[in-house]
Length: 278
Image (cartoon, rainbow, N blue to C red; front, side, top):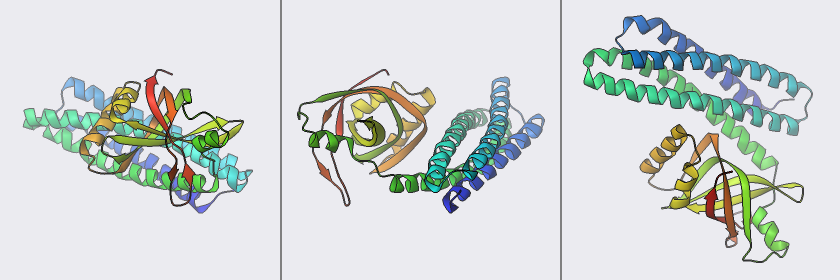
């Protein structure tokens, strides 16, 4: 069983896969007609090859998801779709990072040698087409994830600890945390939300941390991911959220924060005191 949100997200994924294939093969055909040094030529060929491969993986996973949805109820369908489509977005995001690095290199080469400018324009035009399609996918999948979060309420982890009577000085260690987004709440202060298990049930864990701890977390990230987060921080002017579909995995020692009251919920964040390898 599907919902309009699932159908829309799957349709955008198929469309993005097609756009990736069409533009990657177009660049491959046009490479003999532009000037490019050997290193950038090899990098371009690899990026295009990766995108063609990602396209085939996306279509295969969408086919498997479609079959799985036929026998699932609505709640199961939302969970299956959010998990599968989230993974597809991570794959696409990895290709977007590689494409961005290629464009930066080609732009610099074009500035050094105007004859290389046509290569930059070739890749930039196709990259723009792909990025526009990717942004539509991401928006559709984010909408689906928001629906899942709304329908699958999870109690707050910190509040559950307080209500269980734990000591306020309790320090908790988490050895495998998967960071998929960062939200800036004020200058130098950040937060994220992670699902953890407490007494056999899923709970929402709010983690707050400062910029020093964020830098420690980025030490555990892939170089391209760390670079993208730092670029976001450089341009950040106010509150905002950055999605990290490729995930950053780390461990942390935490302490209990103060009780917070939002419009429809009460929660207790945990404050990261130390970041360590998983």
